[in-house]
Image (cartoon, rainbow, N blue to C red; front, side, top):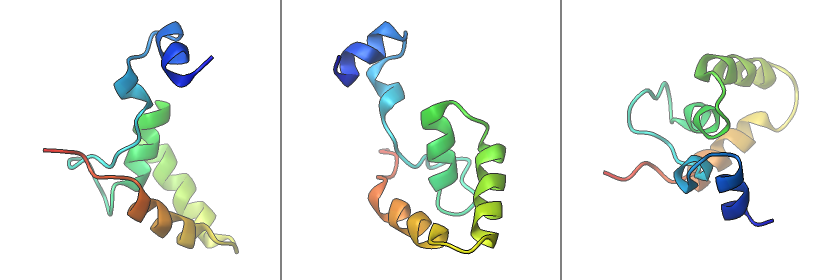
Length: 76
């Protein structure tokens, strides 16, 4: 089943499947808000988990910067 069919089967429209950085509600670059909106999670939870993961050793900060570049901003 492709993404469009799954989308309709789950009661979501195709806009719910898109990942973009909203212009409003950003704290820094909007990456955490974009991920939270995409998966229906709390933006605060995603932000806290992001900060906690950056404290741990690993490539989290690099991944955040790459997502910042790759996730398009919200259109006007």
